[in-house]
Image 1 (cartoon, rainbow, N blue to C red):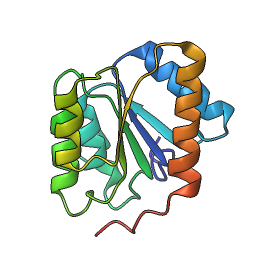
Image 2 (image 1 turned 45 degrees about the vertical axis):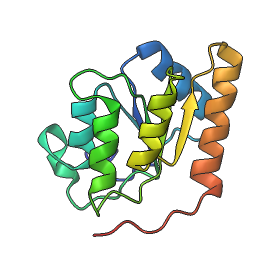
Image 3 (image 1 turned 90 degrees about the vertical axis):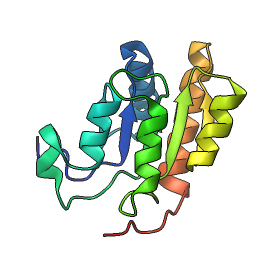
Length: 151
């Protein structure tokens, strides 16, 4: 498992198994899910990102190329996860894409105030959802050139 966690390109933070499976399928279809890790709540996401708890063996390993973050999460909500990622110099340059069912203006505004790189409301229609995730993956993994994360 440690080897699989060494080079993570996509960290999917999603508590809904159906939405997670749709994301994973769409990324696999585009050959973008080889180095994907799925965590199911905000606390697990923070442990993974900051190499704590069950993920303490990740110390010194590469950071994800992109984090796909749901806002409505158990244990620690997505806004708090985003707040902690963007407050830490080691992780603030990791692109974070909020992928959520929320369409509320206050969620959009707060996400951008906290430093989110993109805010996308999950399409309800299956084909549109898959297309959106696939395009997200292509952009953030193949086209985008983020700065090297601080050590």
